[in-house]
Image 1 (cartoon, rainbow, N blue to C red):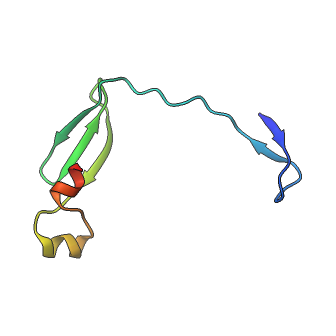
Image 2: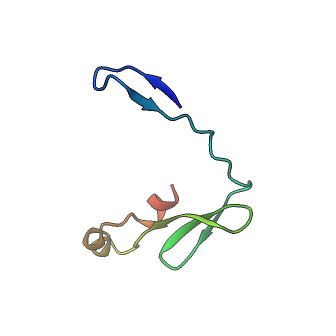
Length: 70
C-alpha cells in the first residue's frame, strides 16, 4: 500500500489491486425472466432481470428483454 496526500486527508491510503481475471469464454444464458452471464466454469457472475409486459416493467422497475440483452 502506498501513502499519498490529497486535499481531503493528510495520510490517505491507496490500495492497488490486480485486475480481476475471469475464466474465458463468458457465456450468456437466457432464463425465465433473466439473462445470466457465466464464466467458463459455469459460475454465474451477474443476473440481468427483465419483463416483457410494459405495465409489469414499470411496476417492478425492470428492463425489456431487448434492452436487457442490449
